[in-house]
Length: 428
Image (cartoon, rainbow, N blue to C red):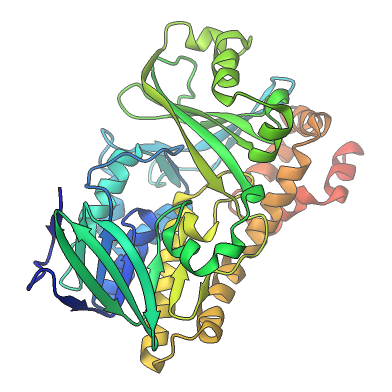
């Protein structure tokens, strides 16, 4: 069913003109919309689903997510932190090495009762609907339940044709934003030659009720099992006694080892000596579902003449942590700023958008991606992972150093340098 949201579109079936077309109303599209509205730039969002709708994901939101939401409207972040039934504050991460020894890393080791949680977990069904409702603005028109049929560009204008409940639309604008996920229609239209399946990982997600042994401060868990390296199995606690349980692994490894990922995941849950007791009385809720994970393993084009790509459409998932939500929102925020600048100068050319958008994204996130890619490569060596975890379990100073690396990129970069491990080896 087609739903027109927030502003009624007049003269259905006729040509609609706006300043920006956004394809997709997930975190990347919502992030773009929030800041376009702040800049008072009219835009139309086209979404194929009808909200609320589910999205396969790990459901973990980092400090980057909180930062963008706070910049959009501080009241929204306060609303999230005041809703324990929908959002669960997360205070740290537990790494479980291939030798099955855990290492707890708090995000805020010196927190006080006044400290706000740096991150949270929430189902995408809840979170995306929250973001969707916050898009309401005099400058935003949302057309959901809509099928996109074509994207064309002529004389510096983009024309989108779409159908909704038997009604056909032609929408034109000087720029289009691809926020339509890993199978992005916008990316295929403009950058089909740049789509490389070798950069993808595959993720499976399941919801379980009754998983035991979760951390009292809702730490998210990453289990680096030997058979999954350089991927991992995750357990993310959610409100109402639920947990998001899943696996992420490189597609290349799946093909090379002929892995049935679903069978492997269920086998680990049933037979791993650390996990099996925790799932003994747990119940699978719903189906195990999968998704593609377009990783930011190298620098890819994010824009061109009259278009920009955000979030998964731009292949902006962190190669190590698998974080996609925060990067989607953050890239949307940067896309809106670039569009504002392009509109002021009347220049939506590839050269201008590369400087205003691509270069800014990679300046802000590029080092993080490089470090994460290096960490992913290091995870191929189980002995090295075991070595660091064993040392950190015995050394509070090393554990605190690793904790700081999650908030300080300069420190995090040390993890990718051989000198870091030599210092550990010689206790320096």
